[in-house]
Each structure stands twice: as C-alpha cells, then as structure tokens.
Picture 1 (cartoon, rainbow, N blue to C red):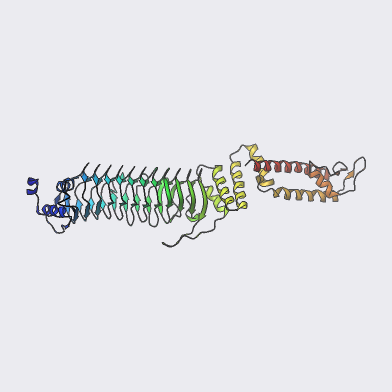
Picture 2: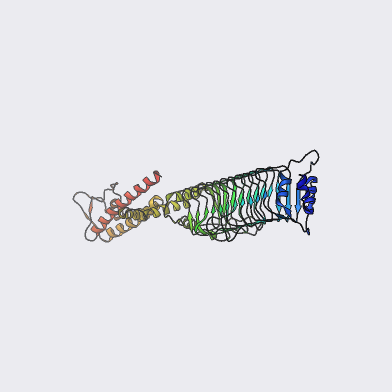
Length: 490
C-alpha cells in the first residue's frame, strides 16, 4: 500500500484522510480527478474499526475517472456522494454494503445485481445515462429515485431493471423522476409502498412498467402528474392496499394501457386525468373496492372474471382534497360493460348485478340481468333469437313479469269490446247469462274453465278475435312459465 500511497494525487490523499475519519470532503474547484480504483480500494480494504470507528466515504463535487469495480466486495463503510460525476459504469454486482447514497450524481450506469444493502439505497436527483440494474438485489431499507433520470432516450431497453428485487421499505420514484425505457419490477417484493406520483416513464416500444407478480405490502401510487408512454403491466400482482391512478395519464397506442389480470388489490382507483389510450384489462382481478370516473373510462375494457364488493364513481378534485362520489346510472354502467372488445360474456353482468343486490338495489340488478339476456340473444341461432324476442317482449325474460299482466289486460279489453259489439250465440244446451268480460277471460286463461268459452259461439269477425285470444293465452302462459323457470334456475 505504500507504493499506492506515493502515487496518490493531492485530491486522492485528502480523500483517504477524510475516509478514515468519516469526514465529508468537498472537492469543488480541485484540479485533480479521483481515480475509480482508489475509491474501490478505500471501500473494499479492511479498516481497523478500533482505530477508525467512523470510517465512511463522504465526497462532494468530485470527478471519478475509470470504472469503479466493487464486485463481490464487502463494503462496511457507509457511502455518501453528492454532485459526483463518473466517467464509467459503477459496478456493485453481488456486493454487500452498509448503505449507499448518491445525490445529484452523474453516471453512465449502475450494475448492482445481487447487491445486498443493509440500509437505504438512495439515488436522489441522479442522472444515469444507462440502465440501473438491481435484479435480485436485497435492500434492507428503502430505494429512493426521486428527481432522477434513468436510461437513454435513443437506445431504449431497460431504464430500471429490478426484477426479483426485495425491498424492506419503500420504492420511491417521485417528484420529476424520468425513465427512458422499461421499468422492470417483475416478481419484486416491496415491504412498503411503490410511490410514482409525478414520475414519467417513456417506453413507446413496449410496457412502461412491467411488473408481473409484483408483491407490495402497501400501495402502488401513480397519482398526480404520473405519465406513462407505454403500458402498465401488473398481471398477478399482489397489492395490500391501493392501486391508485388518480389524475394519471397513460398512452399505450395499440397495446395494453393497463393490464391487472389475476391481480389482487384492496382498492383500485381508476380515476385518471384523461381516458387511457389503449386497452385496459381487469380480467380475473380481485378487488374489495373499485373507484372510477365515467369521464375517463377507457374505450376498450375487459372485465371477464373481475370481482369486487364495492363499485363507486368519484369526481375529480384539487390535489390534497378527497374525491367526492358522483352518481352513475344503470345505463352508464351497462355502457361500461359493453366496452369489451371480445364481445358478450355473462360474468361481468352477473358481478354488476350482485353488486347492486348487495346494496339493496334490486331493480337495478334486474335491469342488468335483463340486459345480459338481450346481449346473449344476439349470439344465438335464429329460432332461439325469435323465442328470445317473445320472452323479452312478453315478460322481459322473467325480470318484468308485470308485462304479462299488461298484455293480458289489453287483450281482455279487446275481447270484451268485441263480444259486446258482436254478441256470440248460445251453443246447444243451457248457456249461462251472457257476459262478454268473462267470455274473453275464459278464452285467455287456457288452464281455467269459467264455463263461458264452451257455452257461447263467436260469430263473424269475433271468431278471429276468439282464436287470437286463445293463441295469446297460451303464449303468455308459456312465457310466464319459461321466465319463472329461468329465475328459479339462476
């Protein structure tokens, strides 16, 4: 080490002395740069803790040249760098560190796959012109990327690769964070929250955030000011609290704007700033509550297998204020269901009807189930469609049985007037007293004999009315029985 010490320039000698005493060194205005291998030597050397208990790397406004290689190293000293620029990639692959803080630093990239950080990993305000690789990393504290810029706008690829990363605290990328390329969080585990409010992620060639099987104990918050150019993929994600897109903007033309198929969340907030551009898929989602805004419903929405306990619409509100509820009609919700690009499926209608029934809105539930039958009718063969039209018009598929009474009253009145204007003649035998109303009713009720149908013989045009009443009676009876059977078999 004596030879190494003789080759140190003045800035490096000052850095070594400051490191051993844990003092902060500001090299603003210094002519000499610091070589990366000198920094690596300080970080990886065994320091006598008895003689230097406060050893730490605390450096400001420096330029580090060369590749800082600390692969597989055990870095016991804390690292704090502010306003430091690197000429080459920083490599912490498979290293073990106490804590790493880089504030307002510039570096071509950070390789930290399999890194173990016992404290926080803080990259606040950094400009990383390449990728940050945190795959399989284990972070004992939080990861902070607030105000940072990651990735190359021209190269694409991954801006943040953090698949299978484990973080005990939060993953924060807020307040002006910009990623040029994919943010890859598949199978990552976050013990706190994922905080993306105010962030921008641009990856037009693919998903902006690719987070299949992401597990979050807290919330995934991509709220006010969050912008994604590319989709948000959260297939089979597990989110303990909110998945919140309040006032967010997502543009994924020709692809998935939001895919949360098979995910589980406590509450989902689809209260976007503008309707997402691209397809939104909630198929298989399990949520306790879904909050949305009809003004920002996507044009293409998949709801097959989506289950929820509460479905509440919210209105926009100033930042910091709670979003007030807004009324949504059944007609609007039916339009919401019709947005599936794959056409009719019964499950979304049944789920919406169950939601209404849970809230004591039985009339709304029946209307949803009636619409389900009407949508289903379009998928049937011609004979079944004809039968469907009859069931719909007569009793509303069993959800409007009062219609049968209205039809019955109308034809009963027709028969009564007809038999009054053109009286029937008595048949052979003793006939009861003439009563056009009972004669008409006897013809309409095929399974009840009131003694007038067989006693009086229609004449002239009333014969056709009589035949019509018999036909209508059987049709109404068949339709009512079919509708009741459908209701009992639901």
